[in-house]
Length: 122
Image (tube, rainbow, N blue to C red; front, top):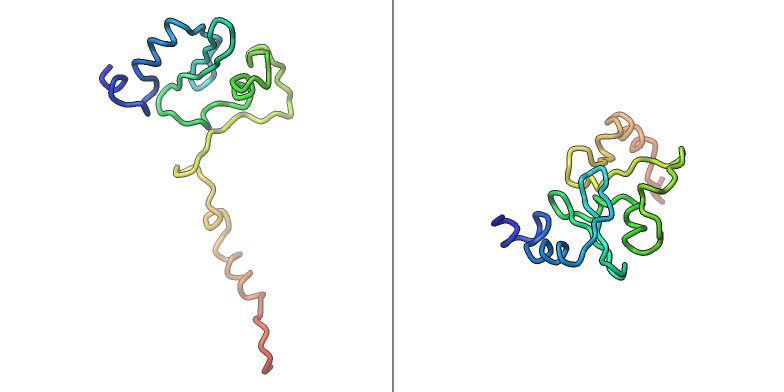
């Protein structure tokens, strides 16, 4: 409860909890545990994050609903076989992409040896 009063980066604040209780209607939640709300006349939509507040934790279907691009909530939407599963931003984690690690050192050395710098005296 103290985190909720004094910090905004650990989920909802006390003011958001009270405002959501008085004005919000729970629409649904996603696989990560984020909860999505709207007010009574659907003029505002918002998300309460589970854990740290990070916008990449919202999958594209819920993002479309939050921004009024889609009127149907994501639980009702059709999931096509060509759609990939949503992955949040992995920057700063062990699972992030690193081009130096993804290529072997031999490939990098061979690439540098293939190139010969032009010299006008040669």
